[in-house]
Image (cartoon, rainbow, N blue to C red; front, side, top):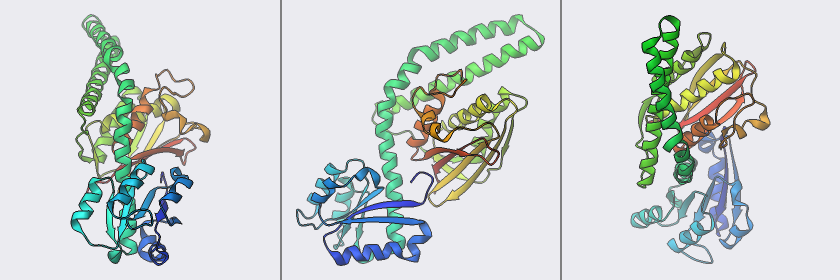
Length: 356
């Protein structure tokens, strides 16, 4: 679903009439209001799922009454077969207790067939995909703990404290511009040490088998604070933030996420870079676009720059920044990708959950 309103749906339903009804709901005007396109694949049994490449689907619609099994046993078998695919249960019964049991056993939603229409069905699918992405993000973040700890535990904190203490000594012995430069080093050291401590708190939360506390954040204010990092790197850098009055769901690391994107633009697009920031509300998410007028990023490298340890040509960094950005945005249940900006540079596009 990255960057599109296309849904690819796998339907497991043994009743041809019910399958036709689902297809009819997807073709209705209510459904097309929320998504541009729904690609529906219909199979009639759980056994047939084994012959399907489920990685290509966004969501599984599952009838609980199938030839091989009925009720919640069907759901249990399906969750074992498609571990990373969100499942929405379709049923002919209206049973509140069973609906709660289904959700506790891994279903994203429970929809009685008698209450279905295009609006409710597509909304359920889109929310299921977002919720499933958040759950996968939690698993991924646990896997990333070893990497983050290797960066933070000794090298970064110890190194930055040494740099800060030496720079602070210089501020006491220098004057004029030299003193100002030393004070800048102290300020940046404080920022990086603070960021390191914040990331360590995230890791501590994960190690306790919890989630980072999410809250409503004013997106325009967050972007203003993050843009100050880019401006501190170069007096020639221009950041035009057109975002105001929009709330998103995130934690207090969101400033650092966008701060990394702004400083990345200065590093790779030049000190005189102009960065244009806009945002639009897209149904359940807010889409932020950070576009610069640099030389851009070739299409075949746009996904790779987010990989662990990857960095652009000429970069003096460790490859940590964009990996951190990608990891944190995914942890919020969001998404990030790169396009070409209107000025021919790079445009980082970020989807974040919209605050209700």
